[in-house]
Length: 138
Image (cartoon, rainbow, N blue to C red; front, side, top):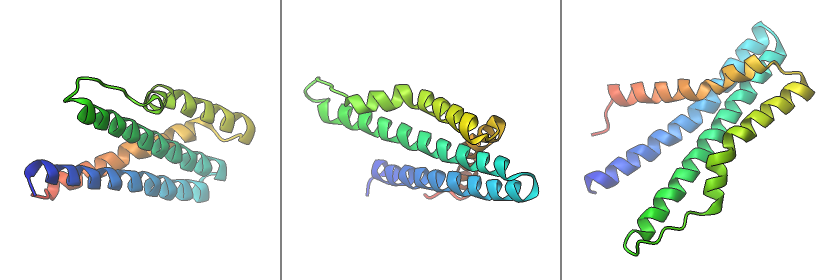
């Protein structure tokens, strides 16, 4: 296996860990806050973590589609990026904002709790990054 292929496997593994940890951290924090503070706050943290996970997945899918298109079309010089990739890249934040508004408005979940839940992605990324630094795969 060459270095570039090994790097790709390592990146995919890290992306998978970040994806899983986002949901795990959100669930743990949501349950703890729900039990110790208020269930609506716990629910908000879990919803925010789920939205962060969805955002991460859409970003990953969009970038994968873009890089695959560039790799496929590079010899011919013609690049046609799928429209779904543009949609996911441009409207993912708008869809998250709309989801947060609807959840806040109709389920009466505090917005700040959902914002804290969105931070689960950052916590997961930090945890995986520290792990990669302390235990390199090479």
